Length: 400
Image (cartoon, rainbow, N blue to C red):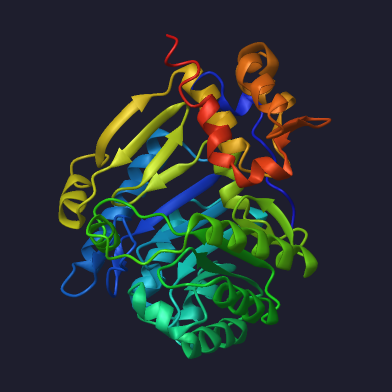
């Protein structure tokens, strides 16, 4: 497996971008988790096939408007894409191949999955349809914690799903874990990390819980009914998982992501390199030719809108200044940091020429450090990443 190569200036110039990354949104779930603010809807009584037909219409219109380049990564998220029935999954994957036919030989085609929704038949359909990477939302190896966050699976489902995936021919597998959960202790996280590492997977994503608005957890939090770990305990959890993953031979290549060499998430790297990508499906975001868009969210409104044109809720030009801020904010999440060369390719100036003040402030504070290529978070900066990112957000656009 190879790294995603940044697009060159010519890929993005003259208004003719050739996106290499595709995001597709399947908004259906068996139930709504207590922490989830994603654009997702409980599956029961939903018009799934009509939605997939609408998604096909959006694909067709999109590639007519902006023809794709050689596709290097495809990511199917949700929701829970694996709630699709095998025949629905086969139809969906066939449409993806129809409208994005030019795949790189080493394409990374990822699909999110929930343990308990992936029997061998469905996984085989996914594999035959081109999917070669599956990311399972495990979150914890304690059943009581899983129940407490609204997950439908238990730990037995995790092991069964991974066994099915391997039988179907998948080798590139990832699982998500979470920390900072209600009633979670440092010891409980340590047990989950140990059990996860015993699986010997090529990739792990480990995220801290964020209490988002319009979720059950936010309602509970406002009522002081959410027993979260303290900030000190959460910091201990993050330090523990970084130490355990490093000791086990995994490279921390981004604040929340760990991989064996060569198995980083190529699709996510497209985001973190601030590259163009298609975003298709209800509520999906896309970024092409320095224009961002967000699609209509509801299943039926989205599906109806695809009959008339592109199902946009909003679409807007990203200013050069905002694109520069985005480059720094997302690029510094990656532990290798931001590259002067990539910045110059996109904007024609050096990072220091634009962000001298926040760079020097963060360097003096010991939160950033220089590299041969540019700048990266220091070990201390890893623990205070949001403070660093905040120095760049609005730095140019507020001055305008």
